[in-house]
Image (cartoon, rainbow, N blue to C red):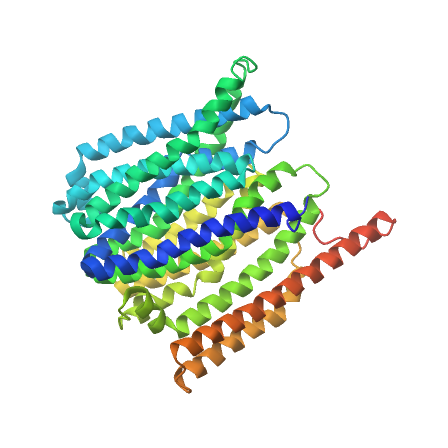
Length: 499
């Protein structure tokens, strides 16, 4: 199995289509909120969305990742796989509902904890509805991901991440942020119910074909593997949410909004690389004991080189054009961007590296290695949180992402025994990325390039980079293939990625 096969590229195209839809929503919606109800309400809206992003994966109990890992493995009938998924959906829904009922009972204390003000307790109910909808969405996506039915998974993603938020905005002017968030959760629940129906139909069709022996095995694997991933999801949420919450107690909500936009920029990098991770995990899980695994790891190494190069290109150009980006994004390019927005984007290549490689680590072992890396990163961030200084908070947030990317790379190298010989092919594209940043700075500052000129410049530079990266990946795969061919003929050349 290869990551450059036709089926993989087809699924990748579908997944990117869904991610682009969600990306457009993430870019456009904050601008609508800022212009219609102001920066203060934008700060609340973004903080609510950040809390949802932080809490949703721990509330799934890791079942989504467990489904993506176990469903592709051989030896299970279709009816058994569907029952695994329904058990995961039911378990995550009941667990989340119980916790959210407690949150509603203590909504004033929760509002004081999250927002620093009890008068915002009215936002707790829509927050709870939105959390429940997202939990069901994530577990369902894990099912379709594990079954490699990416068409269904991506249709659900487009509806819940791209269409539903825009529909909910229709109530923004009259109902405010509270009603908008509430409607977003309700619409998502309705969409999720539609995508549960195919599972129920298969469950009924295979009712007599499946015995009762599957339950204990499913429960043991789902809970054993999934619970081990809860710290990973929780720590990722903390990494992206604790600093904005702490900043809300120290600065204005406008500053919080700007800081969260910096974190959202990293999320854009995650969206850019996320589809690869979505497809890599089930494929690596399905080929862990196959001879094709070395080729897959070689492909992952090539993707890593491309990811680092794109991350360097993206963070450099975003820093140079930060005033223009924020002006288009929010309608306001605040001078505070130099201490609240620009520093965060430096971490882009490191966070993208983590997002690419963490899925291969989850596919390899039930031991939650990613939690170890995230624990250290969060510990570093907490040093900034308790420092009492905004500048230190930003510094430690950035440093935490740098450590996370490096540790994830080291774990991947140790687990798969990979030698990074393919990265040498990406030296020239990396140099081009740095030179292109200098050229864009000169075009912006020295030649006073306008918006149309800068947009054309970015498109041409990025297209050139993508073409170069494709050539590098093609060269790396040809060299690996020739080494395998030589090995089969009896000559052992020191194959670079054999486990």
